[in-house]
Image 1 (spheres, rainbow, N blue to C red):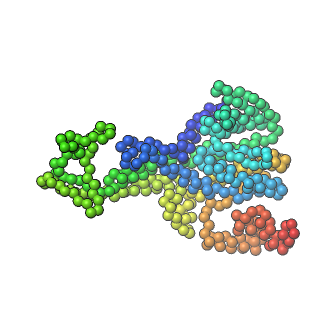
Image 2 (tube, rainbow, N blue to C red):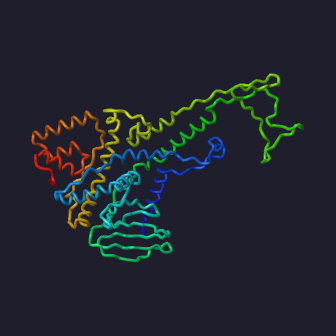
Length: 409
């Protein structure tokens, strides 16, 4: 029942998600005593890469010539902001994500992850979309949304058995996002190399990062012995090694001739390999190096460093705009009972560039000049200067500028 293409992609998605949230891995036996633990969790560097892109994807508003429908759909998108955040991060991570429209108990958008072999959503070649879920008892259920019908299945003995078919005279309420290309999948090996370099640095620092003392020319046995010269053994039957511990103010007496005590120099840590791998992360992803190191530049330096990252964000904005228009048209049909074509909707995004005070002043000056020249309306000017304002505040501000009483007064 589930297409082979979805099954094949599920294996890759599992690999990607495991790399993004790596599980703890067992340490080799010789290193367990060195680190004082049996397992070590790798650093999730790919999470920083995903956040660098997804955290710049913010939907400003959607526009339609019918203002009543626009405001109604806009409110639903605003209340579903968290689901959109999950969706955008999933598209960057997996290359695919789904958004489902529900109307009970109230209209809302629900994020559905791509199918990973157990649960999630997937697409059929004919445009239908299936969603696999699991009940509290562990039973898997499949819902297939087709044009005109909704089919429901139950898994029995690894076979899908249809249990119900429902007529559905509306558009398919599940919309697919993404092009199927994961942004981080090519970086999995690079993350493994970086974790290995960090692990090697820590191991070397613990092993030879401190001075190592030695005794040369001592005739003493390496093991503790009793009065009869027999080695002492511990509870496991192994002989107990002789150790000499030097503390501040302590001294060691060596009675053997030509014996001496000395100290090997510590090996200083070298992070050259780690820095090189981080530079490769920045090279292949366009994410500035300061995202990984934490040293944030200011002003024009940030904009120069983020040029490639912002270009990637704008590419994702273009990729996500078409399915968002499809979501708006479907919401209009399901919620507002209005037939709406996708081309009627315009999707506006917040710009990915970080705006300094100087750049903001230049933008305000340009807007004022455009309004005075009759090239921009006052409403569009307010939206341009204050892109973070809600719709109600924009309407109130435009009313004040026009000299008319505020709405509702």
